[in-house]
Image 1 (spheres, rainbow, N blue to C red):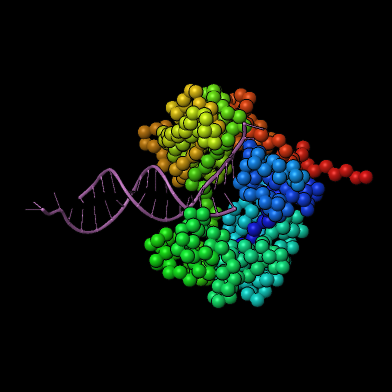
Image 2 (cartoon, protein in one colour):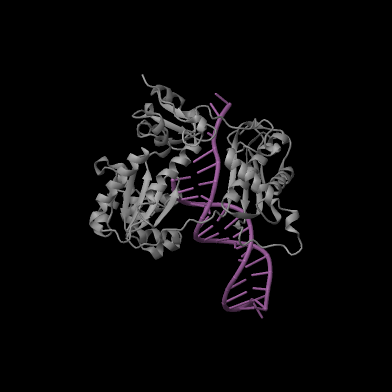
Length: 420
DNA sequence: TCTGGGGTCCTAGGACCC
DNA sequence: TCTGGGGTCCTAGGACCC
């Protein structure tokens, strides 16, 4: 059996922990540039706010219902996520952090008759320890655990947890689940499935996996088996990322090369930092820039370039220089750029790096320097020391007009409580 | 005026090998 | 008129996840 533990409206719940005024009222959390809605409280959901919808299209609705609106605060969410995950990992040796707000637990060896009680205890414990409410779905496969979670979230009478056994009992429930809500069935497949007369999960579970594999792909065939209670996806070990992307939309349109260079250098430096954190080297880097495709009246331009490093590296200086070199190659004067990004690719473990016979790697890498930079930033806070080229004003930065504090990760921003 | 960011996996098709 | 058989690797693009 598997359990899927999922934090309810996670970003909103994090904000509520430190600001009780947000409880019981509609709350929205916005994307990076205060651009889109990326989290909604239940109250906001029932008012009709849609995930991913631009804020400016919802201004009237926000004003009308006096909705609380917040910029995203990923420092806070990341730290709260760590707390929840640490506690959850104490429940089973077999666990997988699936996303910032979800964890799969392997329940082998747990007494089946007590799973329900067990789920209730887990919910209570997480709520008490972190003030984050979670929902728990349990099933014989990951897909069924996800489906059980779908029901646990939707029906208040289930009190936040639900177990989906396989066989007839599960089938009876799955006919209430739209095919598009199944884990792994997205918009495209669900449209295609509907055109074939398959509208809910039970119908998909009863369809022929071999035929569906031909019509769609292996993944959908596996999903069918999983819905039938035959496990195809196991608990996965945490592995190093295979690529690292840092990208942002700008707060305003950028035309000058120098400003763009600063942004790209900044992204490259962040990516390099992440790279060293996971003990990897990168073989190459891709840089991209683009104008806003929403502004149909502006001239459109989008381009990217991939550059290989002379050898696998985790050196910020080399990575930064290469990023700027790439930018030079794709930059065109006369466009209003809205977004840029840097992607590190062909990542390998720094323990298994392949040296180049013809290159003296010490002349390329600044290992000692990188180490010192990382240590200083660890000790005195992120960006305590940084590259000059990344800090020339940062006018490309996006808006974060209504951001809560870093309550849990910055001594200067601890929660203040006033007593009457 | 204003439209997120960060990932993984699969497939088809092309290029290439003998 | 007729034009082999069997394979690998790489890439771009699509679909999906949160």
